[in-house]
Length: 243
Length: 126
Image (cartoon, rainbow over all chains, first blue to last red):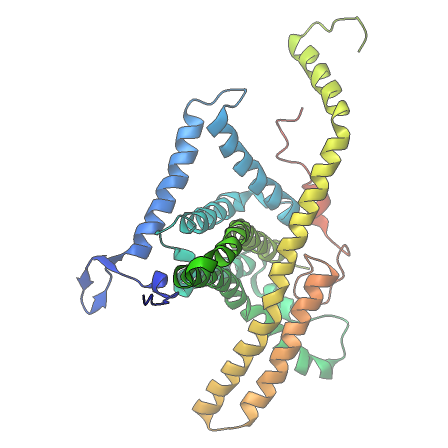
């Protein structure tokens, strides 16, 4: 009885509808399908839950309101004044990542956020938006972000590159954090699942671990969406309220 | 809150809600603890990767610069140390004040936005 252990198989991209435009492969893949489903779910939740809005919310409406208030609180306490303008952006980001992560927890589905290009695209949007807002609101003064004050001139030679580096590293930390957490978690689940299938009688041990891991993965799924959103808020705060 | 009935039914409802809130105050504190724990976990997940990515990326950048300019091994050496510094700076900032941004500003030094925009969304509470 040979069971092959291929824990990374779950991340393969399959073309569902092959599309080629010019030399570009823009096929509709299983990853794209899961993203579409996530968007449809979020939209459906928000639209259906608020369609018959009541003063005393019913089940779905209160779910939508909880989501709203959670993100509103986060935006409020992290950006403060002028933060409301960014609420739609942060809310979209948070709900999309949350749903993509949670949909990935369904067996045999696909975790879009385990693809680094997806998370990097999201992080790049955040990074470009933050930089653009900083420049639009403060003009040339935005560059003062990289010059720490109260420091001797010759030290600036060393400190400005460090500041620049720590600024430009953000889209990478932001994307790698989300991608690595999802990839590692799902790989681990698949490995323990594979153990259980291959060792027969003693399978209860890896299965037991997997039960715990699934719980942990749900925590990670929610937490990583939260971390992504809160870091976006912090970066926006910095661009809006330049020192 | 005596037998005197406020004229407005909504005001009466408000009073009852206030009373109920007061009774549930201790439980709310416990909920606050849990959200603090949640934030703590989120925080831990956040800074864990900060240092690693900074060093890795800077070193890769140094290697690329060396590759293009033929300055091996100086680019990789210099950028490795810059990466270590940037990573440690990021972690230090994250630890010393969660929202301390780039630049050497202490948290709470001039956070004008925080107080001014305290509760602009809280329209359902009162």
